[in-house]
Each structure stands twice: as C-alpha cells, then as structure tokens.
Image (cartoon, rainbow, N blue to C red; front, side, top):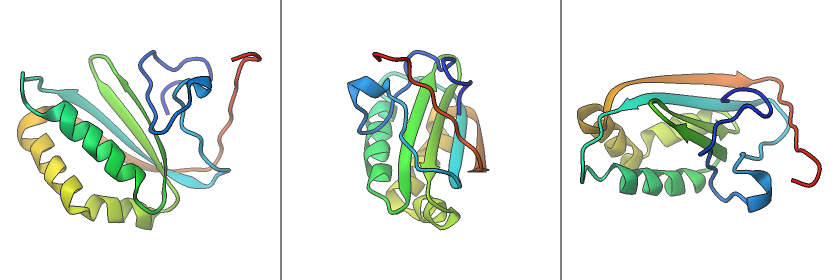
Length: 131
C-alpha cells in the first residue's frame, strides 16, 4: 500500500468505491495477496493508455479472487491490486486481454516498471469520525 493511515496521496482510486470510503479498497481479514505495480510512463498523445487502463481495471474486477485496487499517480504511477490467493494472480496474468496490455506496456507505455507480489499478513484501518 501507499503510506500509512492518513498518508495516502490525493488521486487514490478504487473500483466500485463509494464516496464515503475515500477510494480505498475494502479487503477481508488477512491473509491475502497484494500485487504492487510501480511504473514511469512514456506519455504520448493518443496512445490509448487511458482507455486500456479502464478496460483492464474493469476486467480485473470480474476475475475470481479479485478483492480490490488502489491507484495513485504523480511522476510515478502505483497500482496495488489485492487478491485472495496466488492462483488468482496467476490466472489474471494469463488472461489474454491482460497479456496483450502487458505487451503494449513494455513496447509503448512504460519507460520502466517494477512488479512486486506480497502476502499481506496484517492490515489496519482508520476512518475519521464523520467521514
């Protein structure tokens, strides 16, 4: 995840979020898995990145084992997706549409990226009263 409670940057987004939750993913009690994708974009007008990104977010949300996602972007984009188990992550990696988007990322959209997969053992939440 990005920062600790109260340290998340503006622009954090989550699929199927409500206005009350500030865009944070709602995950179950651990353990579960996090896929952390950090990237430096190669921005070009008309490159179809934004359209593909929205399509991939919606497609991932329909995959078995998907739990949620949070994204933030400034100079570096960071997306953390949450999954029930490693098998769900592997199935998402093998998805044909996702595989093509990965290819496009390596050939057109990213100057560099890092992908990390981690098991979440503990998680803590904070919501200010009245928020």
